[in-house]
Image (tube, rainbow, N blue to C red; front, side):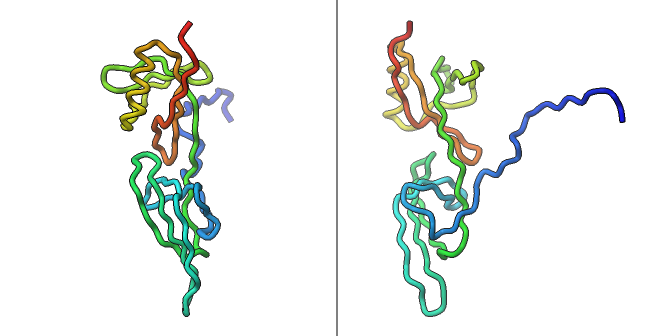
Length: 160
């Protein structure tokens, strides 16, 4: 064995899956589910009775958490569905660049510069107006399946 130390640069995550399996019959309203490879929030679940030959079926109606599109899926209740790992993180807004990207302050003091402004018009105007007025703004960033988007805004008062 050699005595020299090995240095590994960590550029990837720990290899954790973007989704986890959950039995379709146990997924409830306001939970999350993957429909057509998109992370969705479940807004409606209906279960049909077992037929002559088979399984009870679950009918899911979900809203894509990033695009707001309505998606539907029907799955046998005994089968597994993919459920996305959804995380919400709060960051302080530092700057808005000309090209529509935001600069955010993370908890450990570094900056995060790879997020675009949201496409939702009301949230977009709230962020731009609040920033122009010099308020201290905290944005909530939702992340799931390798995508991130600003989903909410909090005003924590004027800048000092």
